Amino acid sequence: MDARSDLDTYREIASSLGIKILYVIDTHVHADHVSGGRALAQWLGADYCLHDSAPAAFEFRRIKDGEELDLGNVGIRVLHTPGHTPDSVCLAVVDRTRADEAWFVLTGDALLVGDAGRPDLSPERDADAIYDSLHRRLAPLADDVEVFPAHFSGSVCGRALSGKPSSTLGFERKHNAAFVPRSPDEFRRFIMDSLPPKPPDFERIVATNLGRQIA
Image 1 (cartoon, rainbow, N blue to C red):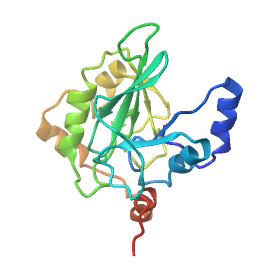
Image 2: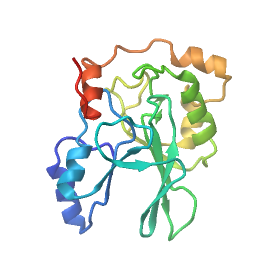
Image 3: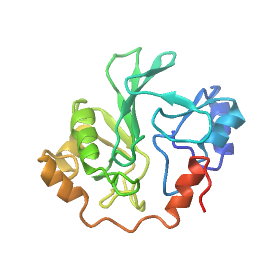
Image 4: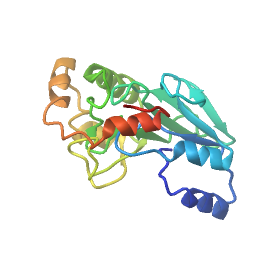
């Protein structure tokens, strides 16, 4: 998920564990770095996956809300969670040998430890979509579901990010100002307040990740 550019790392880890990488998934089209996802998938012969709505200029596996990717005893359930970007997804991971409910969720930039992904890196600036994604798609998951986002402190994709790279939905529900219950209007004002500067050259980075050129 959200592969970095140092591709050798993934092959070395897979080799050491004796596993084959079948899917490389970007949870959204990134604006802060050039993704290594497509190159990694091509290198490994894996499927490169983005949400069906991603306007990429190349062929990719289009994953959709509610779809489940089969990895034997493990299932990856796709949750479409737009807002940070229109194509954002979270990936709920299920260990079928233990239960049919989510064990942990890979939240990309939708829900971060201490914050939510900023809404101003796509043309929609869609704070309402972030609210729906957080409070109608992720909030129904159980408190003990672990949360693994794409970023922690140091990233410009949020404002109050923790240095801890993981959390639980229950802890975030209590202590994350973006995830505590509030009205849509209150949330809209909150999420648009005090946004950090946009990543340098972010439009070129997005175009690169979409396989497009900009003037």
